[in-house]
Image 1 (spheres, rainbow, N blue to C red):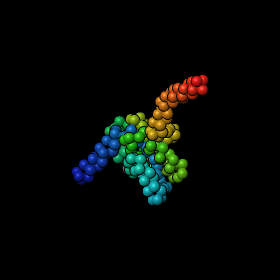
Image 2 (tube, helix red, strand yellow; image 1 turned 120 degrees about the horizontal axis):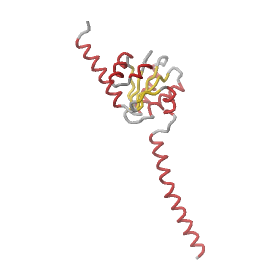
Image 3 (cartoon, one colour; image 1 turned 135 degrees about the vertical axis):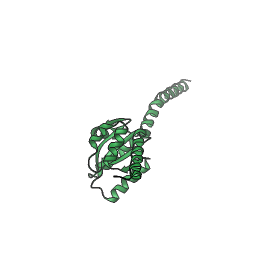
Image 4 (tube, rainbow, N blue to C red; image 1 turned 60 degrees about the vertical axis):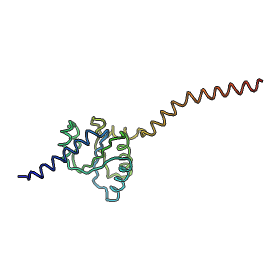
Length: 167
């Protein structure tokens, strides 16, 4: 029979992963089998710079955490070696980084994700990765908001120049 301390430590691990699943806006699950140490280090560095936590976890622990977080659909992708990326700030960043890395390194395989409490498949993860980043979306919004002001300023300038020429 397992020691009570070991059982308690495992339960604390499940609770911690459950909390991360609930708190993160995007959680991406990948199969890292075949990546060498240098590749994994580079991937971790890219994710860390974006504020994304990356962990290799046992599938049994993930299954229990997913069940506790009411994400039972996630169990379908928990086969083979599994690593998971948690993002609490940016919805697109983990999908974008992992998808770009998978394009350059065939060994990394996207399995699925949880986006704002909804489990999505590989194709949806790839579609999410193609979206512009938060900063890109904000700059697009800013340019859309500036366009009417810019056009008005150009019209006023054109009227002023026309009056100067007529005078």
